[in-house]
Image 1: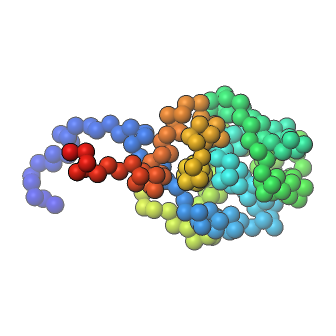
Image 2: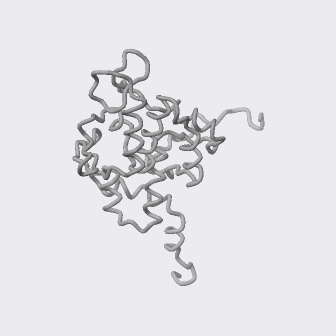
Image 3: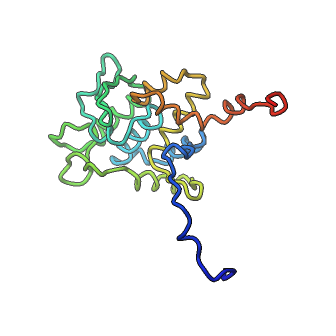
Length: 215
C-alpha cells in the first residue's frame, strides 16, 4: 500500500509448511447425501459414478485403487472386496456393503459398456478401456457438487480424498479405535491415521486443559 519504499517480502525467511500442518477437510453429513442424490442414476455414466462415490464415501477407497479395481476383486459369496492397496502394497479386505453391492450390480447389468477390459470401472467413450493413471474424477465430483448446490469453503481443495476424510471423522465420532480406522483406510502406519484426529473437534474439546489447574 506504499507505506514503505522497500518491499521486505523477499527478505523474509522461508517457512517450511509440513503436510500434516493442515486440518483435512471433511464434509457435512447432509452434503454427502445431497451429493449422492444429485447423480442421475438413470444414465450409464451416472450408475458408474454413483458406485465410485459410494466406495469412497462409505469405504474410504483411494482413487488409485478404484481405477485399478478388477472384477476379480469382488467376492460375491463372501460379500467382500479384496485388493492390494496401490500406495502401500498392503493387502486389504473390506465388506461389500449392500448399497455398494447393489450399485455395482446395477452398473454391471445396465450401465457398463461391452468391453474385454477386466477393470470394474471403465471409460464410457470408445475405446471402453481402463482409466489413465492421472484420472482423479475431480471434474466429475465438482460437476455433481454444482448440481447439488454444494459450495466448498474458500481455499479448500475438495477432491475425492475429502470424502475419505469425512469417513474418518464419522468413524472417530462413533468411537471407532484408531487401529481399526487405520485398517479400513489402508494405512500401514497408525501415525498417518492420527492426522484425522484433528477433524474430531468434539474429541479435541475433551482434551482441553484448564490453565488454572495446570499452573
